[in-house]
Length: 283
Image (cartoon, rainbow, N blue to C red; front, side):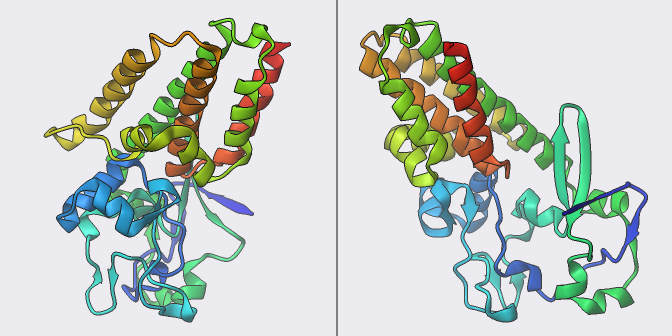
């Protein structure tokens, strides 16, 4: 159950720095956040993805020693120093214990459950200064990373639209071939392994660890969007065979779903909705 919060709601949001929230969590990662963490570790993005992420690069791996309640620590957490990459921490870490929901232009913040999460992990937080939700989020410097996540939602939608175009504007849907639908079904009902299989290694890299070159952080996501668009146009323009079109549409759909997973969206539900929409379009 979600409890939505007004910006002026005052809560025990001053951190105790005990590290309990760095154990056993589900930390979603966009490609831009993965790249930031890789730089903070002095690693390439592909090396960081292999060593410190799961779910195809969309989750920060909890692979450290067990700590609070026997839960594994985040791979970036050190029991003596705390977070080793604090300036590069992802949005999910900055928001905690809050969550963010975006619908159109509407942005809302919430916490899960009736009981405020910090009271379980850090009951001593009640003795620290209380903050308004707005002041807490301002101090966490979330604005840029919120924009990054919103941008990746748009990129995911563009990829999904490309998948629909390949199927329905090419004549593939009217051909009677069920190959595309089987491929879409595998993506919509599968998890990260199915998405990566549909993408292939080259497109998996393009989605999660793109070779963008040296650009400023505020230009990184637009550069990624342009790269994906140019590669899609270049590689898909010459496809004519039904099997090629079906595979390419599933590739774009899988890329969209993987990006949705990286922004913390309910990617499985959205993928199923796209599959239903495809059936409606076909009819």
